[in-house]
Image (tube, rainbow, N blue to C red; front, side):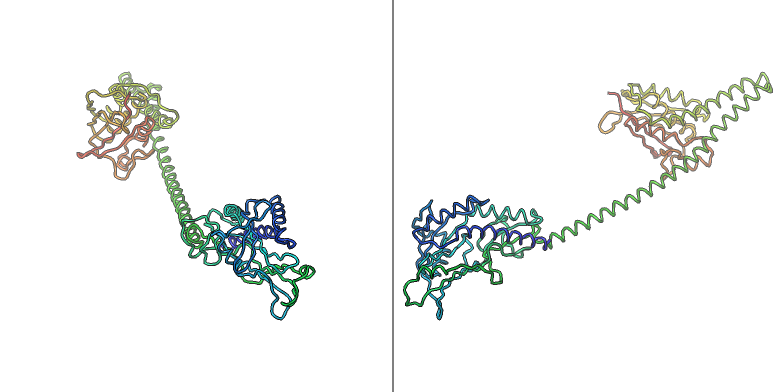
Length: 520
């Protein structure tokens, strides 16, 4: 970043110096006399403005006679008008007072010289000073071109925008080289001094101009025209930093070091975040793999359990059918065999219906209608009657008064309640209770249907609503079941936008609460 900044600043310096030196060259030229200076300067300035891409860079052009009391004339159109030194040009008045009005040879020589060092000229107000020696005289004159602050600021802004890399990250100023007190261009006027800028380089012209003329000895007649023609101006670099202006820049973070440190911290945080996400993803994949393995194990167990559940009634049905077809059953036993066929067929139908219902529970949205709670409970009791009778279970009903209707699929809800009743009858003993009361779902009216029993309750750490999950006690007791009953109840609840929870009442047993939306 620092190297790129220095390279960009070098480009700013070169282009700014080229622009200003081109302006200085435009007003310079063959020497002119005081009387002809106005026409000459006006013509040269007009030619420069016609060709320049930033003609607004020039504020004023002055003709200066140096000496202890320098005189000033301002170019107004094509005439030079005497002009009192304004307070704003006081630095240039001081500079002009350091030069003699008439050149004299150096001791022991016949050559008179005047040297202008760019580094020694005033930085503000910005301007260019061009030495002039009218022909046939040893009188010294200067052309002072003052630069418009707005035009110079626009030029500097364009150069900075074009050449400095990471432009938006830096605050930039152009200040005087002497003391840094005067500012030509400032993007951060309220930022205070740049104590340790990231960039501090000289910009603009950095030459030494020397005008030399061959003159006779001090007591010789005034210089003749041929002698004056030997005058010349030479611009050269003498080493060192001879700029009047400095380009300083500071990163908006305080310094490039601070910005790099902040970037390093952000990158470290990002890297740690990426590692965290990768770690979480690996953990999630591992957990998902474990869940899939567990699901596969439960599916295998389910297949084995369903196979057993289906084989048993099928074997009984087949045996009863063979006995009836072979005529080995007496007339008095036909009714008993018919009851066996009926009960085993009902058990087989229940198992098949449970499997098919669970497999198709997510296939489509439920058909929701307004249905009274009592009707759904009555339908569920009718479906679960064989299981309830086989277990010898009595069902007690408790309905809250003014119970709202359900907004649900009657068949799906009846199937879910039938599964809850069957589980309570098989695992919970002879006393089964069904309660219903108004409830809420996220601030909307709902109905809670609770089925409870007095059995051993749910085993700790076992999610009974997961498919194919059966408790250890049920497996050890060889209690019939597929492990899909409660999973089907949860699917029905979720399809209706409801919920189902398993509870452990204080007096023991198990309680499952199915909450479904009420009809509007």
